[in-house]
Length: 433
Image 1 (cartoon, rainbow, N blue to C red):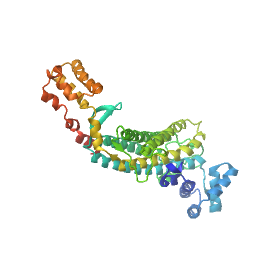
Image 2: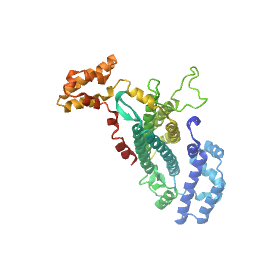
Image 3: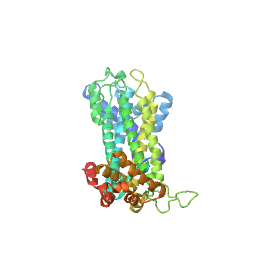
Image 4: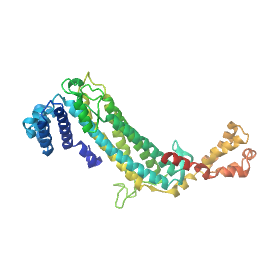
């Protein structure tokens, strides 16, 4: 976790203090269930809760014990015994380390996901507000980065809203898939612990009991989870890239907010660079990179090995912390985005009506001209605009082959911008309901 790209709300979830507190809760809830089953005294379960809740787990002490034991869960249990006293002998009855580690990891992922969902809600709200603000702000649509046909800036933002709404739904599904608990003991057979203990712990921790664990929770769940984060990151990059292109000096249709006192370059005082969206592009690359090792974690040896462990200690915090930061940053970009409708209009008309070529093509075909001939007639006039800076309408009106099929009024009518925005309300109704 890099402090520069971290928010305290998310990093706290992955702190050692938070992890050990979750470990304790898993163990204590298991003791409650064991007590109800008569395996351990109820008084001992109560003592474990009382003393554990009152304690502040000493991270340095746990690390000190681990340096000797070379085992993190045993180090924690030893420290817990120092706090609880003799009743600690009933902790971890019939359990294995993965019961604690895997269940804790999933609890942390669920907590992280809840925060990511809040981030998504704020981003969606910002996109919806700005989309409606610019629903009728006409701009040029581009394909291959070349002028295509008119659209509106609101439609661009509505597209982003729809995409992130899909991302939100995927994240909800990923949360459900990852929210499982395993308290099944060595190799997952429940030989030394009753399945009712797992059910109790799962309910208490807000999880579902894993269908079948093999000492570890199957890592296909985690692979899907981190892949989902990668897809969200890609959607972030898509919108960030659009903003970066639209901020180019030659385009300048939108711009990141440039605050008073902000500096764009150490060498060139005139610079106003799209640093936030460039940063988002880089962060998206990092989040996506965590998906591949998560997929490679699926194939473990037999009932378990720990080749996945070191990976998850890194990608769990890093992927969620980075995506959290990126979503919040993107929301800020959208909320403060400077939009320049005059520049949009200027760019739209840069090639003097060329963007209406398809309407003329279709009109010619409807007037009885073959599609091949229609395309040839329109293209030869369009090329004059590209190559000689001619006016498209003027050239069409001067082309006898075109005017033989279409009247002047029919040709002029094809240059109406409103034609391209007549279904914007339909699009918005589909996106926003």
